[in-house]
Length: 376
Image 1 (cartoon, helix red, strand yellow):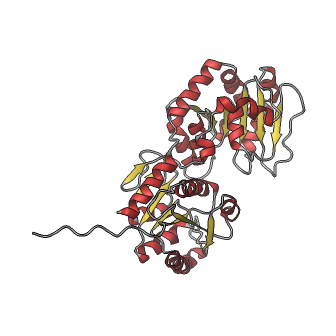
Image 2: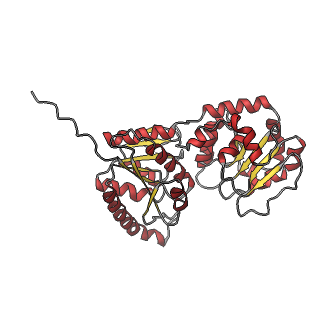
Image 3: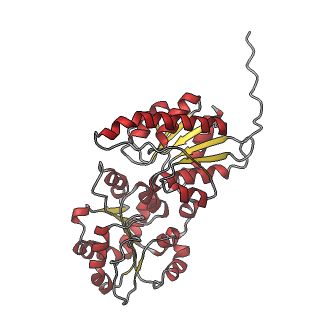
């Protein structure tokens, strides 16, 4: 009779987790949320996991990752041309160099698992991990996966997705990892403080307008064009115009219409608002759902329609509205949003359905999945 194999020796060093998600905020934010969740696992075998983020010198990660207290290591970027050009001929050489550099980093870091979030940082990380024998976990933020994650999913020990039905093999629905400052936000308890922070009245219905970190011209034009109608209905506005859109302004008046370049405290902005007029990037949709803030989503009118797909589950669940960019106007805001903002029962219903569509513990779920791959 064959005896059972002896149990593995206890781990004497922390798990080494390498995260690849540089480039855009849509990749970086979930990466950082997972990094935060992992380092909170102080009871893991060997102590809290060691987390290292991969990025490139050209991405937002050079600022965002160190600001959150995580280690960042740089690899060569491998941008993929959107159209067949002569630059496409240079891609294989760039990939080989990036994979070689990344594999050397994985060896140096004694990596136990690589978690990728897509984009041009993730592809060389997936290929390097495969060659180094390091297991891979893929997280896809959008309903339509990009090239890097389509490749990574074929090499992965586990695949996690934000949206159910995302077409990747073996995908598990975990939701979008988000910061605890968002997922733990009590909007009602913080509302008075948040409105005072932005110079808003304590008791007026409030519209939040934002178009991503750079703003959005169509949202700026529609919201400011409807300023008179909003004020006439008693609605106040907090509007992030984008740092380069200095021409966007509204005369002082009552109720307040507060215009800022950028919102450093999105938690306070969400707490101050009753409804958001915004793009439907994957992170924005997930954050609004997590905090129970209904959105009027305006998908970016370029790409493969992923922003529309991001918003659809929340809208179909009754937690928001959807308007195409070409149809957005000051008249639409006046005719559609003003009646909602002045109807407390409708706002409460939208907020309830928005919250039901969210996954507030996605960071912890993905951390569990990541560590289970290491144990396996």
